[in-house]
Image 1 (cartoon, rainbow, N blue to C red):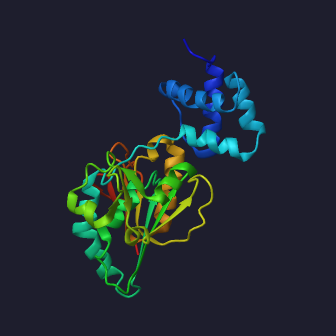
Image 2: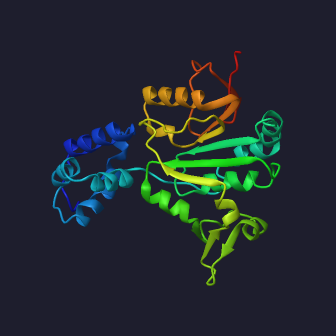
Image 3: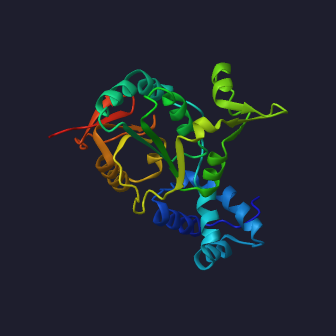
Length: 273
């Protein structure tokens, strides 16, 4: 038996607020997930019902609304997740960018929806030391959830969460804690990355252009209209022939002729000049 009454109206009310705030679509199959996560917030605020919590979200300061969105958003990630993307970056795109950007000596990469940082750090591990030393190479890592951004910026991971990395990678890129229970990303890697909070549905302050954009396992939460807007925005911010990576369970419709499908959820900006 549930601790709190949770009606369909409660679920729909929360779902509408999440969609309005960040475009995430919560289908009926997410009802149990929403209950368990918001029940924690109800307890934390000393409330007794979902209706009270909805009223708090609507009437309280931005602080609880931020907790509400952070509670709903799912953050599941790992180092070198969908490894073929990083293999393509290492084996093909680094050399392409060196040739293409030889005049500007500038490379910009955006990790949109970076969660706890595994993705941008994996990108950094892939490209660190691969460009000439006088080049300006930077990674922008953004996420809606302020709490996971704080963890990403700290760059400390449990031994369990890095168990997929080779020992050579661990020695090269991480500092092991005295008790062996955690690893901290080395400053040389962190210096490549800037972490910023960003709601993808709000205006984007960055001007680009980006050579690569990673937006993986984020689009699954949006409806088609929102996805189309995001694809348009990514296209606008990519350099000519720039690349977009999306998640393994995500697709881009054939109507998006502004991108060339390279297979394995990798896309290249089409050039019509």
